[in-house]
Image (tube, rainbow, N blue to C red; front, side, top):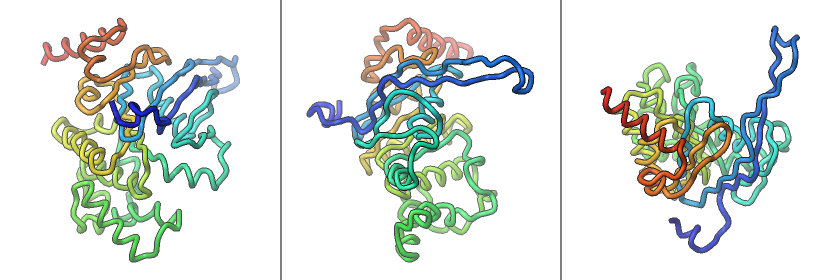
Length: 275
């Protein structure tokens, strides 16, 4: 348990009764409208300096919840980040969007699709500072070198094109871009699923190092309960748009209370047996 949790301090991220639904029309948008519920009254808290793993099968609503937290899609309910209420898509003013960008950033599944292929890595890392007019040129360059070191790359990488980088190096650049504004919380949505096992393990260890060095909070989204247990302080299990179980990682992994969590663990054992 984090010190913030023990002292009763306000959560860094608070998700209260968040629901979301998609509207689907068949026959190319001309047919009958169908409403598909995705999230159903989700509640979740993350304390400062805490890593929370959100785990569940594909289609259960994990990524949708992450996008709600980032303010990218519509939802009902309440989400606050560091005491500031997050608005859903289109409901934040430009000033509020800039403020929220300094508190919360994201790292996505496919690093290649997250990076502009015609720009150098250094240009991409510097871009958030330019957009927010956060520093002069010399300070921006210093910050780029600092962040490259944080993500395990030397300063020479800022002169490399994206097509010169391996998948793991691209993901390190993506993580570096997310760190440039010194956010308190990062949403990491399946950040290692597109990488091979050894490179994915290196990225997991990088997240752990950043957590320790920067007191960085993470919402780590994954379908793999083993990865979540390895990295996270707390686990929330999602099924059918609801969080069906959450608690300390050791307790959820070793003594699951919900049947769906037990099924996830059983599936891991079956995969091991087939390997």
